[in-house]
Each structure stands twice: as structure tokens, then as C-alpha cells.
Amino acid sequence: MRLFSMLITLFSSSFAYATGDSPNASATLTLQREAPPAASIPAPQWYLDDIDFLTRDGGRWVTSNADYMSENEPMESYVIVWEKGYANSMTGRLFAMTDGEETGDFWRFRQYWHAGEGKAVLEQFGFGGAIGLGVIWREDDKMKTVQTFYPPDGATSAPAMQGHIAYNPDANTHVTESYTIADGEWRPNRVYRWRRDTASEETKPDTE
Image 1 (tube, rainbow, N blue to C red):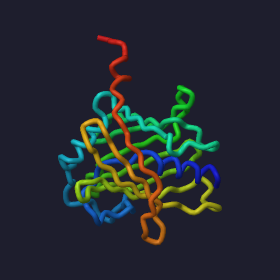
Image 2: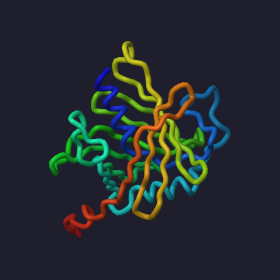
Image 3: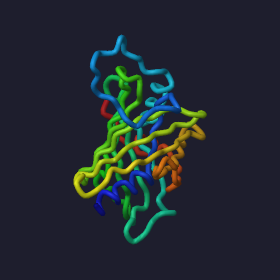
Image 4: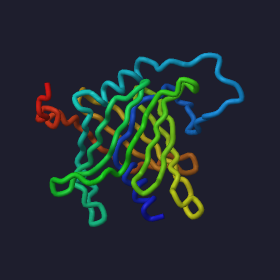
């Protein structure tokens, strides 16, 4: 239970993702139907543009954790790396920096456009066994996501709902606001300002 709570807090403190297009989008994703849809719904251009935004120049983003460091959370900064995948998808991993060294991955992500549902889907998997599933949409020129997180010990821990709002002030900045959702209320958690880390990409050896 404690590990699950720590993982949820970590994710809430970190990154939000930009996709979706309906302010009424549900966090429940229907993966099975009595009959197949009449036609697939293609990914909208703004969704494709967002994947390009997050993955370009190496797809590495860094944020300081100075405002939230503690004895139980000694991480100096958080890092997420996105890579473009097949079929309008991308994968990512979230880790931290402590004393200049990378930690292991806290979360791994898979984000994709579900053509049958016409929704952007975000799945994530925590190192302790927790799983997060939800949808993402665009609202008022910002991106919102709602996810339900399921602990590995479901018999003793209840699922938790988390929300995020994200926006891009400029070409190399991504701001995220995280929320705990309880009784329909979005309760603020943390705010992070992520910067694109192009220096890491520039120092890679030339393999051509």
C-alpha cells in the first residue's frame, strides 16, 4: 500500500500528456464491443503534432524537483524520455537524477490513438506493479487527462484517480499541473516546468 501511494504521488508530481479532444471524454475505455464500429476514426492532426512535439530532438525532458525534495524524496530532478512508435503511438520512461546519477525507471508508458474508440489512450506501468489507464483530451487550448491507477494488491488497496492539465508556453517548455480526483473534485498537487534537454542529443556520437 505504501509503495503504491508513493508511485501515485511520484506520477502526480511529474508529467502530463497531450492528446484527446473532448471535454466530456470518459476515463473508462471500452475495449470490447458487441459489434465492430462502422469505421475507424483517424487520429486528428493536433494529436499527431503533439507526438512530434514531445518526441523531437531526442524526446528528453527535464524538470527540477527542488521545491519538493525531502528525506523521503531526495530526487534532484525528474527526467522523461519519449520515443515515437508505430501506428500513431509513442512510448516513454520516467526516472530521476540523484547526485548526478540516473535512478532506475519509476514508470514506463505507452500512449496511442485508439481508432475504434476515437480516443487517445495512456497506459503506464510502475516498477512496483501498479498500472494506470486513462484517456486524454484537449480543452481550452490545454490538455487534460484522467487516469485510474490500480495497485497490484487490489484486495487491500483501492484504485486511485489522478488528473493532469498541461500546456506548452514555448517550443521547448512543457508545464504540468497534477491533481487528485476525489468525489468529482480536482484537488491540486504539484506544478512542474519541464525543459527540452537538447544537450543530451547533441553529445551523442555520430554513427553515420
